[in-house]
Image 1 (cartoon, rainbow, N blue to C red):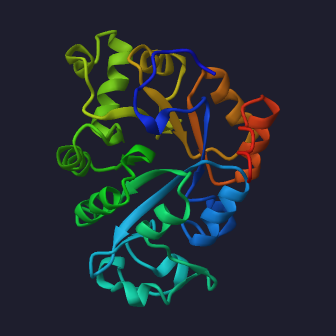
Image 2: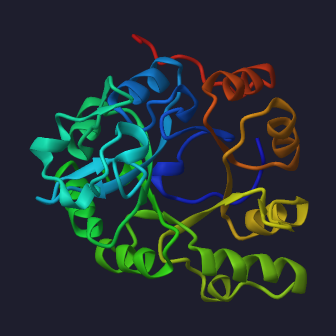
Image 3: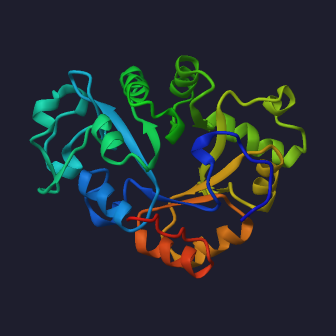
Length: 269
């Protein structure tokens, strides 16, 4: 476990490194489905990375793509389909597309890393989190800086978020220049508690020893996606990263267990 100044957010009140089931464990072919989430929880995962779109009638649902085609053969966009129709669609012919409110109810002990995939999903997602009183067990991320800024503005500092692409780029540049990241000088990050990044962006190596050390200096976690092989997982843990997202649940679990990082089962489970 890496030693550094920690966030006070309840979402990260757990031993490091964190094991994230990416889309519930996408390697099984039923990503983000009710079946995938249940499988991840059964395997011992307590953090699940997922994606949220909103249906035509405003229901937040767990789904990655804009359209249904890749996983169901249906060419419609999620935002054009009402919930009653989505409920009848099966992922890879079998698994259900879950509603966010149902997931928060069905898995009360699980923490969710949510990528809000569209602008129209922002209000509905935040409303669902408020109704479920789930802010403390959710972190919001996005590949859209504008969308992430909107989430922070609407939710306030209580909701944990990850850095957006522009913030990550600024942070990476600061690791080379040695200049303190601007928001660190102000003493706050507007709810941003983690850098959730790939190992590389094209030819640029993002996650290295300097990157991790600088993040820890500022009290930020480093979570890396999406890593599915033993050698890379071990190398990242040696760097001191705080979490890893994987599609292959068994691979990450086995590496964590071998290094003494896998959490003990909760009594009664």
